Length: 447
Ligand SMILES: Cc1cc2nc3c(=O)[nH]c(=O)nc-3n(C[C@H](O)[C@H](O)[C@H](O)COP(=O)(O)OP(=O)(O)OC[C@H]3O[C@@H](n4cnc5c(N)ncnc54)[C@H](O)[C@@H]3O)c2cc1C
Image (cartoon, rainbow, N blue to C red):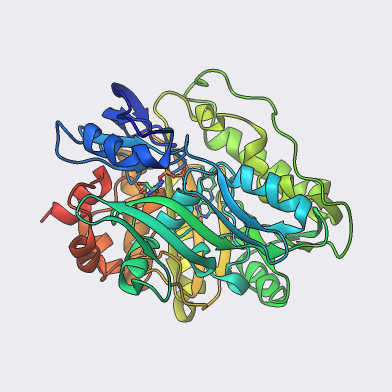
């Protein structure tokens, strides 16, 4: 197949997953790796810059380039080589984890690290160096990448890895898609003996309960907790702790496709303090909050994937995500402070997740995780009130010496970003001059 120049479409409806950030892009969708260069150049022709896009699961503006070009990479999604004996997969950067699972699980392999949705591409997983429930034992996604290929407007195709073009590799893992357009990624998968998970869910009644359970679960490969952000007083920080491991034996059947979808925007008032409060009380008290047994991997890792377009539940104004990490010596106090402020604000977070990260270093200079505790939250967009609360949370994280996650962000001040990511200047130096994003303009150009 010879490479052509894909058509460039003007699309003023491109949105981030949180649906607060949106805007006009000149979008080119290459169908073959050989068309990526032409697509990049054509989409950048008017503004001078463009950005690769995966499945658009980043919540804020790091996956957007409003007013500029976008190269939609999700159509380039083939497996290139799969070594079934050793679990080494080389695949196009547009291949989603959903497809990786369908290919790998029957052969007894699993993504080494997976975020809370399987609808992310390998390119997106590298660009944000994503983390999962096994961060304390496996680190970030980038630790498992052996090689990758990038197209750069100034160098053409470059292969890099931990031992080849190592500095470019270090900048690319967690490099927000700015060091080049990823063409393929080679990743070492993790062996599994079953598609089933052995799972234990336990309630905890306060924040100390979370830290006790988390410490006690250090030998479980997957841990995470849901936390009730509306609980106060003696119940501050109560929630449900979940730990799991791949079962020792069982069928290697991959997940099935499909499920219901939210067809339209829900009314904006659907997720408010009262409905979330009622949900939280029920969720904490439900029998499943004390579950011990086996479960397929799909609901264990990807509960939100069961409802297509669940982001429409927040209504037409969309929602913000906020995720911060705070280091161990101050983690307990800082997380308590965050929870007190959230409960006091009355802003309800539906999907509040708490997790202890481990101390395995990431190969990415700009990776988000660090040893400590991370809290991820969602807030329906209520304008100034919501922004004021997140600014308060930012201050707690800054004072604790932590940082915020760009994949979840659409508004952190430039100063907060630069303090959290001192390597940002190196990334700016290694940035492909043709690549740019709304997020990067905001945090690197603002004074
Ligand atoms: C329900 C849900 C749960 C999530 N859970 C987690 C979690 O547990 N842990 C976690 O770390 N993240 C989590 N995320 C965030 C998500 O994993 C990241 O935002 C991921 O990067 C999205 O991948 P994507 O393919 O959708 O990429 P996009 O969102 O489209 O793009 C993300 C970044 O990748 C770059 N990019 C994409 N493709 C390429 C390419 N081919 N070449 C170069 N750059 C490229 C883009 O330029 C952009 O900077 C979650 C998101 C959702 C919606």
